[in-house]
Image 1 (cartoon, rainbow, N blue to C red):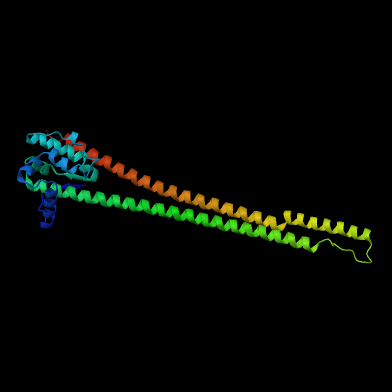
Image 2 (cartoon, helix red, strand yellow):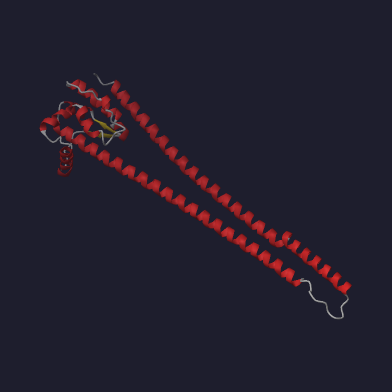
Length: 268
């Protein structure tokens, strides 16, 4: 837990605070005196932390004790989400309008804003990386499928060539030799056609087709295995992310409990 206390800002840090005040037209002494209460400062910080800062939680207050209550609310609802807290004495100085304390708080809020932007950029980069990996995997799967289709086409072409070769080897003669018996020739032609037909049937049901089917089946199993491994890796990463998130939530809950216990012991 990081505790914000009174300290001396460097010249670079002071210039950063002054630049922010000028950008928000709040660099006059009259405006800066209003920062003893949460509302004026929260109003300027709200665009940078829209999900955390709700102006309804910080009604305008007069009187140091009421302003302290506002700062304690800001402490709990905003700063605790960044594992950061305002020290008790620091809150009192803010409520009294100490300009040094106001400058320190503004600098710390600018620092938290930078961290938030950096974290968001890292998350976006990680998301883009995941998308790139997914696209590469899809392209790889498509390439393998195209290769499988090519192999199947080659096997089909090989089978057709063998069928043509068998038919050519058993081609029926179209002319009769002078000394050949017509009955014998007709019988030989029928036997040749039967043999060619049997050979083609053998090709349809034999080794070529069997090998082709086994190869296709192998490719299907390979794709299924690859898809399942991809799902396993995705679920493993998801489990790791959920475990990390759970640990972070448990830590935040414990910190909030400590803050509540501290608030219960603080006199109003």
